[in-house]
Amino acid sequence: MGFSEFFKKKGTGSIAKDRLKLVLVSDRAGCSPEIMEQIKNDIIAVISKYIEIDLEGLDIKIMQMQSENNNGTVPALFANIPIKDLKPAKK
Amino acid sequence: MGEVIVITSGKGGVGKTTTTANVGTGLAMLEKKVVLIDTDIGLRNLDVVMGLENRIVYNLVDVIEGTCRIRNALIKDKRYPNLYLLPSAQTRDKNAVTPEQMKKLADELRDEFDYILMDCPAGIEQGFKNAIAGADRALVVTTPEVSAVRDADRIIGLLEANDMKRSQLIVNRIRMDMVKRGDMMSSDDVCEILAVELIGIVPDDENIVISTNQGEPLVGNDTLAGRAYMNICRRLIGEEVPFLNLEEKQGIFGKLFGKRKKN
Image 1 (spheres, rainbow over the protein chains, first blue to last red):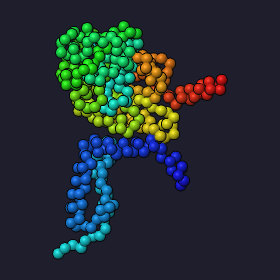
Image 2: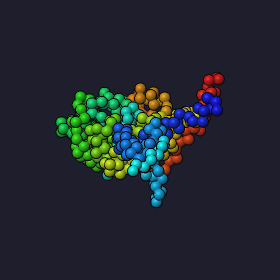
Image 3: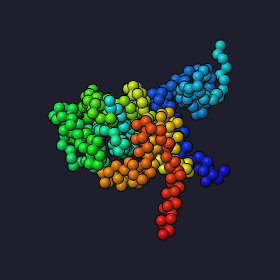
Image 4: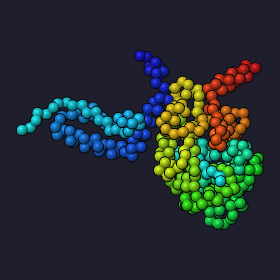
């Protein structure tokens, strides 16, 4: 894919829209980046007790998800945690 | 009983004062009795946009503090006898007035006027709280930019938290050529993100600058922005008006412009 083709596909208008959607989710949830960072660190601490995880690839964010029973959307905490190695269970 | 409408945005410079001046003048053209209140204490602007800056004697703070009566502070517009302006004070600050006092003032004006328009200052502090205190309805002005839409979302949240009965959106300074090539969010994009009722789309029009230079609102004249503002006024009084097809108009304008260039 050529350079110009790439820009044709995604105008800066849709970039703006995508960025807004993301920033508004955390704005509306009243959840600051600092709190997200704390949540992330706590999750790392807990999971690392049992599993060796890839800290570089770890990603958490609040997203809008389609709710299961009604037609509205609800905020959901989304965490993508790549596992490096399952630690052998300690005896 | 008149309706109190606040024009607000969160972010500064998106066109609150221009919108207030044009919507107010448009409502007066539709033969409504209208008063515009500039609630931006310390940064008076609505008077110059209306071209009434030389007629100010008393201001909002004088009325609130009881230095003068409301009727003495109201400035009659030079074009429409049923349009009035209550200017803001330039030498005081926002804390000179409380939300309760603003609500009382708005309620007093309801008997005499069909529409009371509050031009809200930027921000979400005291000035914003004062401006929304007595309002039945809010017009939220935004532009298709990330910063303005984000602030509009915050404002809409605050309006809901303050039990505003109705909030409607005006998307200002749309450039159809940019929307068409995908480099600007469309009014549909903005509406989808903010999930709020749309009442108007105003194109980015250099005639706005020209009209502000002269202190004469352009609502109702044969410019794109003038028509867009008049449509907003008609929707406000309950008429069903389809949204302007800005793209089509752009085409015709482009053709006209092209022709003129050739001649």
